[in-house]
Amino acid sequence: MASHGKSNGIHVFPIRMYVITLLLLLGLMFATVAASFWHPSDFTIGPITINGSLIANLLAMTIAVIKALLVVFYFMHVKFGSDLVKLWALCGFVWVTLMLFILMDYGTRKYEPAPAFEADTGSALYREITRTGENPPKDDYPIVRVR
Image (tube, rainbow, N blue to C red; front, side, top):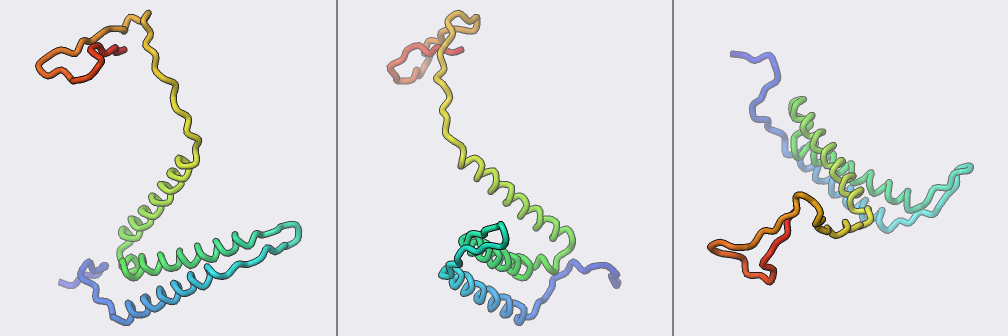
């Protein structure tokens, strides 16, 4: 029976596609190495001064994004997949981006230890628990104060 929709069967791709993708990735790798040795100077456009390291970082990130897109589209076959595959691939990258922003935010915060807990002896919840039973723990504190 003939199908009129998209086929979910096995796709066979020519070796030429993989070779071209590999050569592009190798070329971009050499471009990344060459860009790492390039140190542009600062330049001014009207009242705006653009830092040279910003330009170098933007160039390196652009090359990295192009390499990532080549791998995702061709080696992972997202380009030839269904719309659902493309949606899940996009969701994965959005999730990774959000996680990186969360980790960067968490990693740059100042460490502020919480103040030590002091038991309130006037509280109705104050009680003493003695450590007894078959196998009491071996420690120097026979009484644990729990609030």
